[in-house]
Length: 208
Ligand code: C5P
Image (cartoon, rainbow, N blue to C red; front, side, top):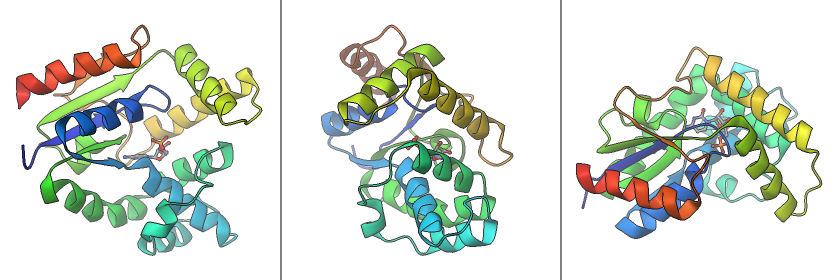
């Protein structure tokens, strides 16, 4: 359906990327991982040897983003995670990325995943899902993900990093991580990707 916008928000490692990608494929919609915009912005700030918490440096980096920045191979990992979360707390950065996300979604409909899609970017999205899971389960998934990529990781440290990022994303003044009032909360702690997808598709069909 043209113009269909599906917002998939939630904390890190809750399964929203996997779910959003599957929904997009099943519905023939474009997919945007909005976390990449913040990751690429954080990376550009680090490249410039600046501090990701510096509003002027971060805004400059956000305004200069190019498609090539989004395709970089070094946007994941603890350093990139924290830089992304730091630049994401800066209002001017969020403002710089807002129109781009809206244009992407409006063009021909899309599934977007992030933290504030249902609350700020597309408050009138057709469907809003808030995907979450217990902190222990999210830490377990992130640990396995890192292992699969061949990155040595310490489980306790992975859990601590997730906790720190959750806190930073939830407590910031602008566009904090919070479910939209009209979002359907999908707790995937006990769900495998297939079950999460089936549940989400049922919600989408109801609202289409
Ligand atoms: O989703 P992902 O973990 O890739 O996002 C990286 C960081 O970017 C998050 O920790 C969050 O601070 C920020 N982000 C955001 N708003 C979004 C998507 C990501 O603030 N819509």
